[in-house]
Image (tube, rainbow, N blue to C red):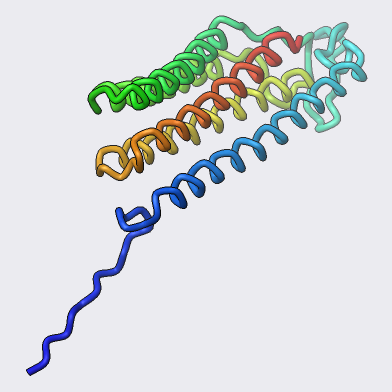
Length: 221
């Protein structure tokens, strides 16, 4: 009776995949994502700059409106007075969390390149994930403390959009970092440095994008 060998299906990141090809695919995917997001972020800031320079103070924050003479937005909302400026304290906390994210990812790559124990590299990734959670928490507090409706003029809409954009960036960063952390846990981090380099590139860009968006939101009044 003949015995036939069975071939088990391979997983996308099994050990039998060419390491060089795996490194190329991983880094190419990260750079493509970062490049596309950088273009969107630049367009967003450019659109804000155009609106801010072209809108009058009256239309930007409804300066001059009073309860006796309220203003009417293009969307039909009544604004009884100037839109108050949003606070910047919580946005500073968001920036701090984003910078900690970038620093932790950089330290994780340094630890991986120096050949230190995995608990150091994995620990820095955990710190990066916690930084994302903390930044999202500060972002939620900033959103809850808004004293205006997001449709109260161009300023309020732009500020609300920047908060949402920061939240999207941080959420995506958290999901991606969790995926990388799972690859590390399963021992599928490639040559030990490529994964951490990808984490550093992605987290570094997230820190830059969130910082820029928060600064623009802070000075947008």
